[in-house]
Length: 152
Image (cartoon, rainbow, N blue to C red; front, side):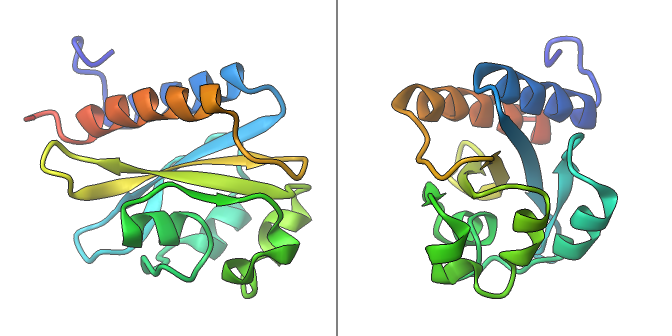
């Protein structure tokens, strides 16, 4: 898809589907950092529009959720259980209302290490990602970075 110069949105949707196929029972989503430094929907084909509207425009902050934290720190952030993680105090009602129990988020970085967005995976059970899931998302996040910065 990258070689054919497909539209970035189509590539990102394909990457979220690949993550979901590799980890049954999960839902993946990509948020992108806009020119003002806020997180916007990049590709979230299985999340409802009202959920996406509720999280649109989050500011990257280390103490907020998984995506905002991953975008702020540039590090993998894991929330095994929304109910016990203080980073989700203000927002936990949103994923819980969709039946999600936890999530994790990998920053998407360009070749210079700048955070372009985040690759998030929601779980319907309380758990951590497996090492295989982490390895897979590292590869998918790299492909997402290439789709988001085709000039690299």
